[in-house]
Amino acid sequence: MGGVGKKPTAGPSGVKDWISTACRFAMDRNDFRRNLLVNLGLFAAGVWVARNLSDFDLMSPQPVT
Picture 1 (cartoon, rainbow, N blue to C red):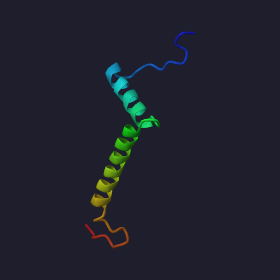
Picture 2: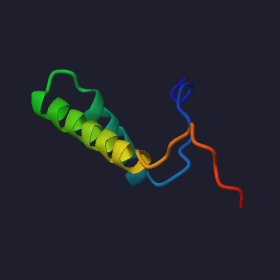
Picture 3: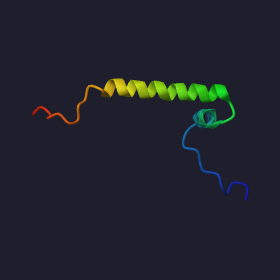
Picture 4: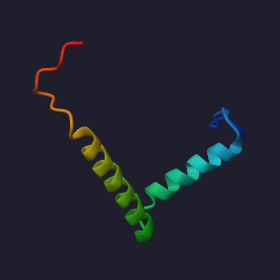
């Protein structure tokens, strides 16, 4: 009964620990600093995407190559 719900790990335990730590970092609702960092990171990612995708006009006719 000891290992009924356990999944075998595909990679080294360091990667698994890093992923679990990152998930705990992002999902902790009680820590203001963590929420602030996560929100600033998501905002920066959104600004980066908006700046890099603003050159595309999806309604304009595309050049024939």
